[in-house]
Amino acid sequence: MTIRRAPDDERGAYTIIDNTTLQDKALTWEARGMLAYLLSKPSKWSVQVGNLVSASPNAKRDKVYALLTELQENGYIVTKRVHDEDGRFTGIERWVYELPQSTSGISVSGESPVVEPETPEIVASRLLCEELNKGIEANGYKPFAVNKTSIASMLRITTIDKHSDSEIREVIKWSQADDFWLQNVRSPDKLRKHFDTLRAQMKRDRKFVPKAVLEQHAKETRDSMRRIEEQKKLMEQTAVPMPEGVRRYRK
Image (cartoon, rainbow, N blue to C red; front, side):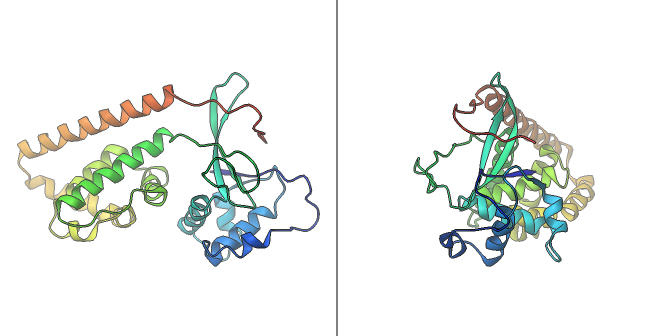
């Protein structure tokens, strides 16, 4: 993931940050520190998450992602879709702001925020969250909130751990049918933490599952994957061009 700092033409040798931001009680101390570090960089400076991990003596990749998610949920990081001169979608940029951007149509800094549609990957992760919640509710437990945090956690299973959507869906179904794991896997974080163990036990137990049950599970998985692909295609067909007047910075 690449992060680009929002424009600031008055940057010098010192970093001046609004006290409102540094005293924002909605942010943890760690998130305020992360924000201050990002704001200290030049406007066109780009950073990979791996670089943020290297710049800290103790933060791991998951922690860095959690802090970036916290900043995004509080409006300090805004996702923007980037298009070329012909209006074709070319990628995603995340801009860092000194003041939080509201969702009311006008930001605190006076700019008009861009409301971004979900990417196909996020749509797929949201559907996987809903699939997990369906099993949790069926087992009589309270479902988790499907929001940016839970979707981001599910997304990491595909983007970082490199598991396919169909594999994740199969593990979800199996975990919510297992007497032990249905009590312990009730969030995307727990699903990711135990994923390798779940997958290994699922493969072992499948040796004793009737063929008819396996075929039914396979059919349900195929149907679910078809719905995901249909939503992905719909998202690609309805991509919203970058509004005119929005400044974009490239490497």
